[in-house]
Length: 188
Image (cartoon, rainbow, N blue to C red; front, side):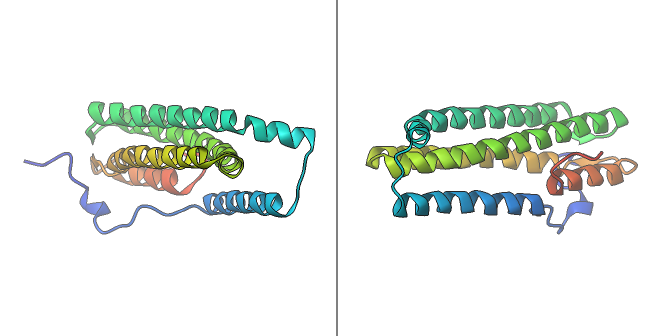
């Protein structure tokens, strides 16, 4: 009996995960902003009204962006898990079309997540630099919890990108999987 949950032979030994260039640029930019802020705060004392307002609001901004991130992750993960229950094997054009909708939706959610991670990272840094030990531990703890939660959803995404597919749909399925992993915007 053919197991519909095993990885297709066509994916065996193929590393699917590649980091797109746009993501590398975004990560470098975020790190530059974070380091720049830390250096700026270390060497300059700014008492401007706007800067003070941003510092005062940073815990609220961090909390709101954190819960938005959890919501975005939850929505994406829920879509993937529902798809896996409905379609453990892609055997028809309708199931492939549903897979494309899932991939498209998750790609857009990933872009929203990148924006929210930027806001969350910067506000979290402000909270850690301007608060005490309790704030530092809280931000680190929430960040670690988010990483573990995100990893569980990533595992589901990897599962949905390694389903068994009928031979006549396999080329299109692989193309969509490749775009999902490597492109910031859907082009299928």
